[in-house]
Length: 506
Image (cartoon, rainbow, N blue to C red):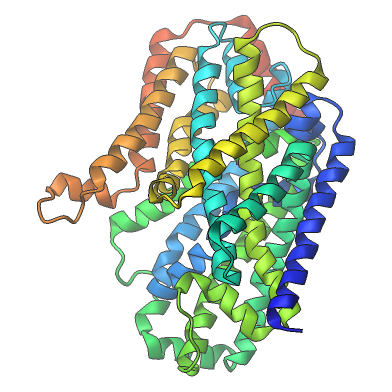
């Protein structure tokens, strides 16, 4: 059999497994909490790998190795920032959000938690945050579909649109029917595949390239600066890279996993699993790029082409075609895990945070679940329509979507969990200012480096927009909250109860 046939067999097995998990989860989904939050019954391993796989996407297997391959270890500062941010998120936010979201009327989405935490009777906070999630994630899902289409186009020479349809159909099917459970279980499988692939390539590769010493010598032969963490780096550049970690506190598709883990004790277990998975996976991605530098230096006749394909190419060189096919499936898993996670959060926002408020008549849980599935379908169709033409503006949006969510929601989540005096007015003002700052900062910074650019424009272009967005959101939220704060016995009682439970179960 040809290599392509082996690869198609591997991808077919992977796709069939994802659909089976969707069917299995469909059988276990009985009500809206099951569909949107898995009945708050995730185990530590599933919760940890689900959060990790939803977070990393194709960046872990393609973007990061490609950046290291071209720029060297100086590009690893983003990975360092993300690791620190993820750990702090698991340590501070996860346990408290798991307890507090249950105490506040069993909130199952981030907008509903903020509304219930602050006793916002106007419903404005929930609506605005729901709209932000709906709009940004629709484009985010679209970008993932674009990545899926490009994957099939570059890996198998298929038509871009056919690849887009294949990826969209499978991921929509298991998300639509299986809901949050399907997304979480498939994320667990996908996260495991990503981890094994990223460990296998550098382990085999270091033997192929002659051991650690010979590998390092080959990399130095390309450029000694590639093994230096500071060559070519500026202080602002390093700070901006590390600041990616700030985004974790406000990513709805990641922190919603904290709300779904079974118990507070299992949150701690999930933290250890999740951070261990993340550190080893990131080290695997970085090592893959370094092995690629050594291998192609030693084998000048071999061709890489696109640096972002270094993981895929090395997998095809080092392993049997069937194993290489599962390596390709790992790349597809990274793409699909993020799409499905974003779809279920967007569906939750549409049904739980917008529909229930706009149409106040009571519906049964079965009707809400049906609406949730319909929402997944509608959002997917809109996202696919946006992705049908490979529009660069969609991909550009992803570059600051992380910053947008981090700046709009990150400070609010932290203050909601740890500060008694947060108010609805403060949260609304901070959310709007954070999101607007990211968008405006990015727009003004796009002209950086142009001949007519001013010093201010160049500065804005060099500073990651999450830094001003996060800081301004935090400052505005604090100031407005202190001005508008009025004691509320119910809020105080829930805050105290959360404190008690956290200390009791620590």
